[in-house]
Length: 64
Image 1 (cartoon, rainbow, N blue to C red):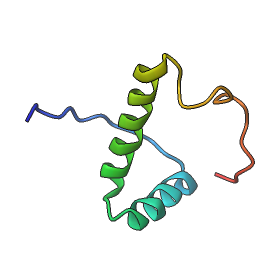
Image 2: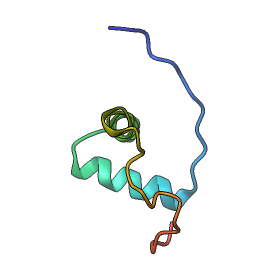
Image 3: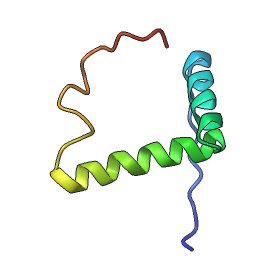
């Protein structure tokens, strides 16, 4: 397996908590969940040349 790079990442407490809860639901670590989400975004972009959604830059209705 290829060597993994370490990347410092700063997240708000609310965003971290939301990702941690999601990771727990999916039986992953927080790091594993972030890696999974980024991998899925890259796969989607490679698949159709676009990011996850057409409206990715629109503000969402969530308090994070």
